[in-house]
Figure (spheres, rainbow, N blue to C red):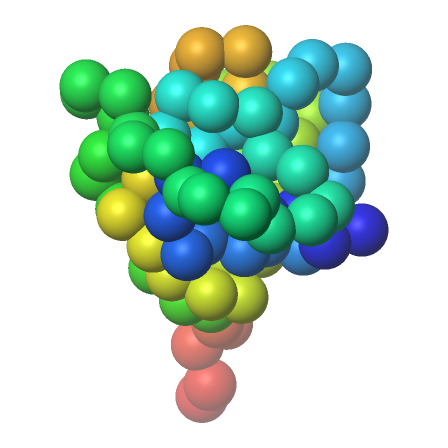
Length: 92
């Protein structure tokens, strides 16, 4: 599923989805772009980075950013963090 922000240019692909409302800029995301975009809420405008995966603390949600924007990704008001890359094994 692809979700679009209602307050900026951010678009994400849902990789893993738990229970809760996916938000960008403090506003719920939707499958369609709005006719007139709103404004990110105060404290929810740290931005998103293209190609990065965003996850919640429990691992229930994983979103892949396919288009960056100004809003912060969150689930039910809790900001998501960028998923750390797994280290490659050392080659001998």
